Every structure is written in C-alpha cells, then in structure tokens.
Image 1 (cartoon, rainbow, N blue to C red):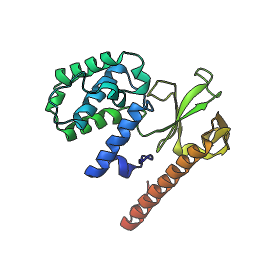
Image 2: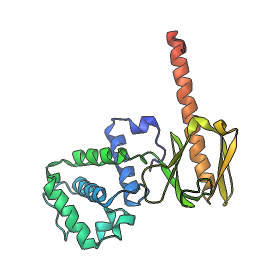
Image 3: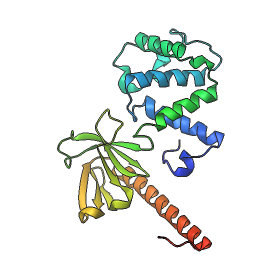
Image 4: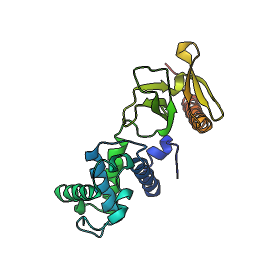
Length: 230
C-alpha cells in the first residue's frame, strides 16, 4: 500500500490512483490512524458499504454480522454496541439516500470527507514528548509533506507543526528516540521517545528529497522561460 503522500499521488485524476487513495483512506480511518467523531464514522461506514456492495439497495442490519468491524474505526467501535452501529449506519444509508450513489460516487464522497481532515496526508507514529507541557506526554506524531505535526490522542487537528522548510536535521537513537533540530530556533533539538525513530527518519528523508526535487524543477522552469524570481 502507498504510504507517502506526494503531490502527484494526492492530485492525480487517474482512476487507478484514485482507487488506491480510497483504499488508503479506508485503512487510515478503520485503524483509527485518523481519528473521527462518531457521526462522521457512521457516514463513512455507509459510503464504504455502498462502494463494496453497490448491488444492495438498502443496508440490512443483519447482513454484516461480525464484519461490521471492517467498516467502523477501531477506537469508535467500543463506544457502542455492534447492533447500534448497524442501526445508525442503516439510518444514514436511508436518510441521506446513499443507495442512489454509484460505487465510484461513494468512493469519491468518502475521499472528499477524509481529505477534508487536517490530519490527512500524515503518516502517524505514537511517541512520548516533554517539550509541550500543556499536552499529554503520549501523543501522535505525523509526518507529511508539511513537515512534522503533533496531535493529541483522538484529535485530527495538530496542536503544533514543525514546517519541513524549517527543519535543520533529524535523526534517531535505535529503539529509543527520534529528534529534530529547528533552524529558526538556532538548531534547538526536540526529542521524542519512540521505537519507530528509523521509520520516521525514512519518511522525513523521502519527503525532504521530494521537496528539493520540486524546488529544482521550478528553478529549471524559471531558467527555461527566462523568468527571474522577485
């Protein structure tokens, strides 16, 4: 499955790419990597059901059985009985005329809702921090083309962003920590306890190279047209 969210992936109109964006969005929602409120979880489940079973004109509350866990975010699921989730999805399916959508239209709406989340595009890691005392120690760290974003558990809105262009360096101690140095703060290090430091660094390096390549392409375009930067 594609993990990095480069612009060519997020803006492509190719049907195959759009489908894999949808698959990745479903995975991020159902695993609660992207936390959502219950109402949105229900709407997304209804759209996912329509995409998977386009031949069904209504949502049968007894149809999915134990497979309901494939449609509801894991962190939300424990908040209500399975029967209640089925009832709520059936209600939205009927009230919002989800059955009138084609499978492709259902996937498009699903993607639009997920892409509207502030957290969209992030690859998420669980870390422990002490640099932001007004927030819990145990948080989620997201890596994206924006840089590094920090999220409270259960939130899809970042409480802090380290901009990619402001990152001086990053590194890790195997199995222990990940750190990042900030240019605008005279190289100050922010340290996060995590066993995923290597993976975070790999993602950061990939995005950094992608950004540098994008800058190089823009430079060559300006040179080719004789454009000068103001």
